[in-house]
Amino acid sequence: PGIHADVATQCLSCETCSAIENHTPGPRAPLEPVVTKHPGQRAGVDIMGPLPATKRRNRYILVLMDYFTSWSEAIPIERQDACTMAAAIISECIARYGTPIMFHSDQCAALYSQGNGLVGRTNRTTKGLPQSFLKRHQADRWDELLPRSMLAYRASIHTTTRCTPAYLTFGRELRLPSKVLSPIPPPEALSLPDYVKNPPENLRTAFTMAQGHMKDAKRHQK
Image 1 (cartoon, one colour):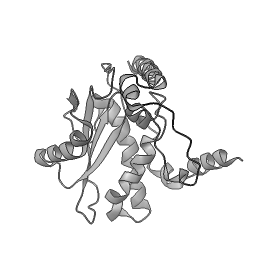
Image 2: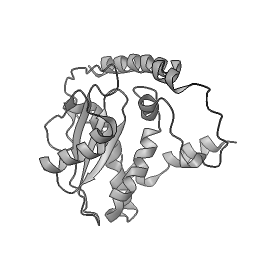
Image 3: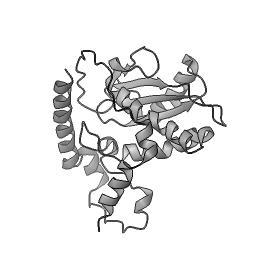
C-alpha cells in the first residue's frame, strides 16, 4: 500500500532528473497540424549529438518515431552521415516494422525540432538519458543502457494519445521485468483466423480515442 505515492515522490525528488530537465520552453513557431490515422503512415527522423564517445565509439542517437502510435526507436550510431543513418533505419526500423508511407525530417540542426515537433518532444525525453548516465559516471556506456530506458518510455502512457506506444503498436501492453513474479492471466480464447479478421474491439476503440486526443493536441499547438 502506498507504493505508487512513494515512487512518485522518489521520481520528483531525483536530483539528477531536476538538473537535466529543461523547465524553460523556447520560442514556438506556428505549427502546421500533422494528422495521421493509422500506424506506419508517417515516421519522424531526427539526430541527437554529438555526445561523449562510448566504448563502442558511438556519439550520436538516431531517433525514429511513428506519428500515430508514438512508438520510437533510439539507435546509437558512430557518425551522422547518410550511409550510416540509412543502414540503421533499414536494419532497426524497416526490417522489423516495414516501410512507413512517409519519412519526415525537419532538415535542421541536430535537436532543433520545431518543424518535427513530435520527434522533438521524444528527443527531449531521450536527451536526458545520456546526461543522467554522465551524472552517474557511466558516460562510456550510455549506448548500452539506452534500450532499457526506451523500454520504460514505450510502456508509459503518452500525454497526447493517452495510451502507451506499445499498446497502439501491438494491441497489448508490454510485460515488464518487474512483472516476472506476477501470475500470468489466462489468454483470451480467440482463434488466429478470428484475430486476423477481427482485431480486438478494445484496440479499435483505442485507435479512435487516440485520433481524438491527437486532434485536440494539434488544436492547442496552433
